[in-house]
Length: 575
Picture 1 (cartoon, rainbow, N blue to C red):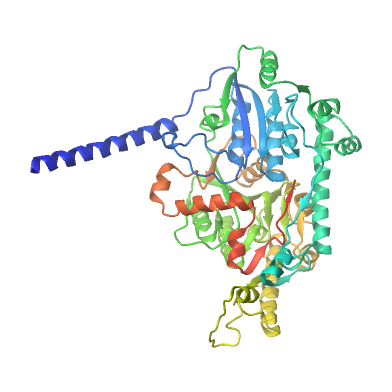
Picture 2 (cartoon, rainbow, N blue to C red):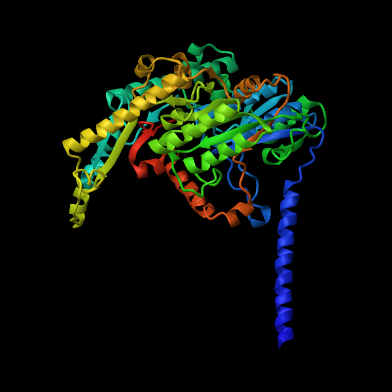
């Protein structure tokens, strides 16, 4: 009998070791950089969301496949492809993109930069909306199938309002804010746009639409007036799009490949997927870089998080996790400069303060440049107030310098459900955050005092970082959201551009010659299979990602926490 149990234990141990060995082997194989054949074409199949921060990477034997590319992955792939003698062209295939206009501009400009290498770019569109078409404008030739519609018909912005629903439920919202444009909570207290909201949203849509028209005009060799007239005729069938000069040719994908083959004059082209090319090192592509620049991503609504956060697995931007990332970068002597990439609508006041402090400490140790993505507003703008150069896209939503407080009053709902609350309190304002009582005039004044103090602190920090007087900042504050182009004209950002511009600026600050290649390291790095096993927060983060898919870019974490917030006043998407 002892020999039986000894043999059983040995068998189990051998099986465990065999599985572990296979896992290690699978990981090593997956990390081996691929070899790119001559006469290759990089295929950019861009679908759905393209995040700033890398997600979980699962091994193929567990159902994982191609890693979801980030904006930085696309940027780096195109830089490598331009220098790589094996890559002869790029095929762009955007489809069902769920990406903000600033990130679209980054991809579009990256493709334009790639074309300067002299290599061709073809785009093949499937039922494109304005988003996919916007990216395709950077290609040398745009193809569509003969039955594909082009849903180019202008832009619109819509905001949900829940006042009537909440009235039926017996729920009311108590909201106080600083800044006349900081109309946070209007979606709960109104049934339509306020004049201030309408002014801001109109300005944003006008700016985005004007930029779209200008890009189409430049790419399709038309005047802006001609483009506006054409767009007013949309949406288009494929033949109508061709007749209007919006695309170059209709046909199936194999016909497009035949044209590309003829263009290359090099035999049958080899297709290289973006997920595969992401694993090619810059050195292998002909972009060696000895000195290192950190590209650290700050993405999501700002919350405090927990002490166990490390900045990688959280779906929100937690001050605990992000500050750890910044401290690690500050202590790494090999890193010669830092680009902080912000995509955040803001969040909790305290968490914003903590990140702002760590950002300023980093700025004292390393050359820093701020790169703003789709949104760097309210708390997302606050954290950027280090005095360093700020780069934004023309389409970036930024500013929103203001503070709000909100809480629900559920008394009416409880009454409808037959629920009552009874309690005791010590302290005049102990129930100021209760969901069963409205704010008294005295409590409202207490909150107003706190909000005003936080707002003044926000103004002071902006004025100091932007080297201007508070009196100059206050008129462009008031909680108003600006596009990047508008913010630059008002001194809230320094330059318009993307990652190329930010890297060039940080190289200059770090005294690195402009022509010298640098290694750009992404922080936090992509999570691996082992992170899923050993990190307790991974399951929660994956659940957060599922919830985020349902609610889109809504900053639900910070909303649910309530209290004092530096948060963009409205949640909207321009389609």
